[in-house]
Length: 57
Picture 1 (cartoon, one colour):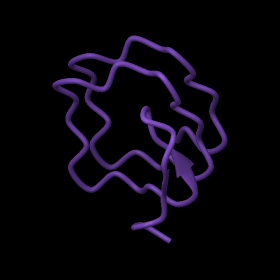
Picture 2 (cartoon, helix red, strand yellow; picture 1 turned 180 degrees about the horizontal axis):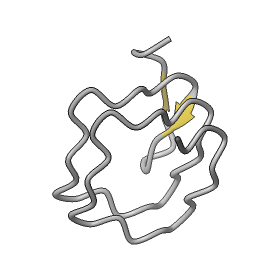
Picture 3 (cartoon, helix red, strand yellow; picture 1 turned 90 degrees about the vertical axis):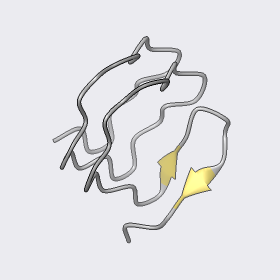
Picture 4 (cartoon, one colour; picture 1 turned 60 degrees about the vertical axis):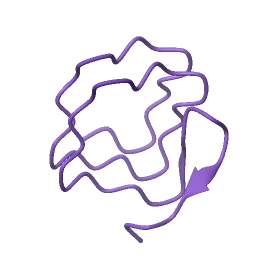
């Protein structure tokens, strides 16, 4: 569970985030290439490009 986590500019390349709750997390500027995000929850999550993802709300 990474709810409200601050992952700003983190190197998450190749990470397995499957089924992870990322509600309210801030991942702006993070390297998200090649991550596994199957069934991850993105609700009010700031993505690496700065947009807010609400698909999992």
